[in-house]
Image 1: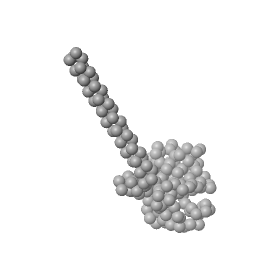
Image 2: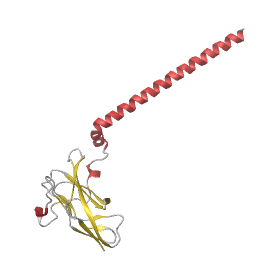
Image 3: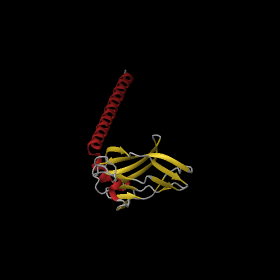
Image 4: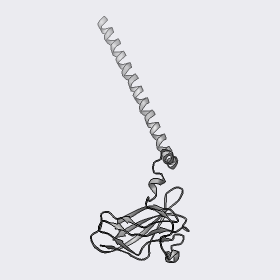
Length: 184
């Protein structure tokens, strides 16, 4: 009988420990879930501020490091595309070396209200994408990788506009005329 009582008491203690362990485990899981929900909500509502504080995705990474302040095209804004409020400029014939170095002459004129990115497309497929440049900046040369084989290619230029404060894409416009890539 004494063994039976001890056995029962031992069983009760074991069940209490299991119940206690289960409660602790459930509490820990609930706390983890609440923390994940709070972090997710914070990232959703305050993502830009968090990235700025942490230094992730800042303008140093957003903007094209090859961008130079000034005017690239000699004829100024007379070649501007009639796109409403965007005035991007690009060389209509882009000379490309065998290593892929291209004289793109991509300019975001100072009058533009948006940051711009250049994307070159051949048959709808992206062959080149620049970094983003601010109004009043240009990129004279860029590297196309992989370097295309020698020949002349027709591509379309697409300009993507970004809000200067949030860095979010706000629209895009396609250059009205095809651009030639002349690879030597």
